[in-house]
Image (tube, rainbow, N blue to C red):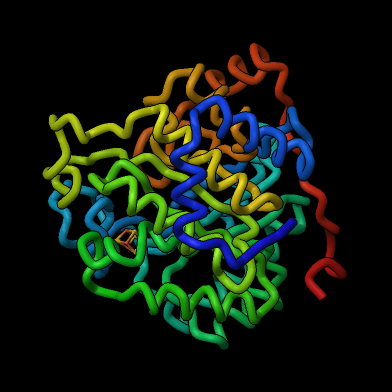
Length: 330
Ligand code: SF4
């Protein structure tokens, strides 16, 4: 049953279940709604890196981070399509493109639209993350055939202001509304391991599971603390620097139970996770991962390592189920 009326107490009670019970419930919900042994492979490309005016405390692409990351201009369409073709050859069925912007400028939109159309023509699902969108920009992306738009709430509403000050939780919800209203699938999740409490993790999942419609895709990231970022400097070399892996699996499992039909995606932080933890995450309902050596600007597990893990687990890559061609964008 799809519920958007979860109470915080119900979400907290799921987190509090004995671990085996929680994973069993999550695996049961997962099997009822998704193929049990298939995981979607997505590739993420940074189409415009660094120099972002936002101050997200975890991000090395913010101008307020002192990480020496070089800012780049928006990539040209041909280079993006080449990278997409390569990702397809490596088995990806979804191609995600991210730009470090507060919001796209109208002058950027024609190139963005070309990228969406081009990747879709290759038969891959498309996803973009470009910051805040106006209603009109969301409509343009929908018309181009964009399948998913990523815009994360990051953390609980209460903790949000400690992580980002340049835009509000409500701003995020507004962009999500524009995306939903334009008919684009919503990809929305956040990051754990930012020094938050269990209560914040409850609030984070609760906020997602009580949106007017569950996000179609829910990325659950584990913070990669990068020195020079606010959170990286705060958490580096402290016991909080890495989320407890059992608690991470619990977060994935609660997301699966609360949002049965969403794709739950393991995203940042997978590189430092053991194979066993990843296997538990798949058991608990994660069914999408990012592949490749890089996630925007931080390290990732790499295609060979993932292929070896899939072989050990008997997991196969999920195929995209999209209509390809011009009619798909209509
Ligand atoms: S997370 Fe996105 S919006 Fe925030 S600073 Fe990084 S690039 Fe900018």
